[in-house]
Image (cartoon, rainbow, N blue to C red; front, side, top):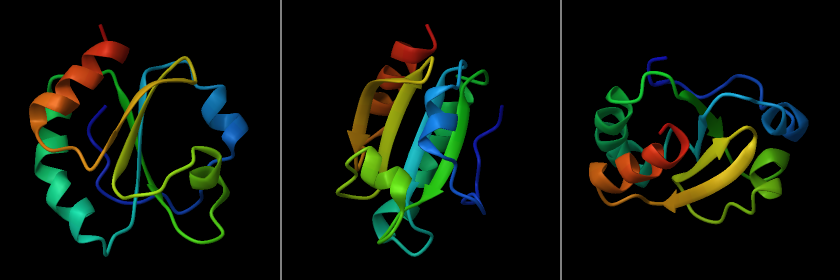
Length: 108
């Protein structure tokens, strides 16, 4: 699956996320967030080597339940899931290598 470039129109319910069987990266952020925008090239580079990983961009903010259920504090936060369970997360990932290592944990 290619990396998603736009935020979802509808925020999935936590139950939908928990039921996902395939390895998934949830990217919490906002389209106007500078940190989120600067992370896109390194995320895209890391995701290229993991075509089987699902990627969901979740617009986070006040009143957004999914972000609260994952206790998101800073953007972007990447949550790496395997069979709907969090394996690891990266907050404001510094480089492609750190993302690749996290992807390897869910897509080995």
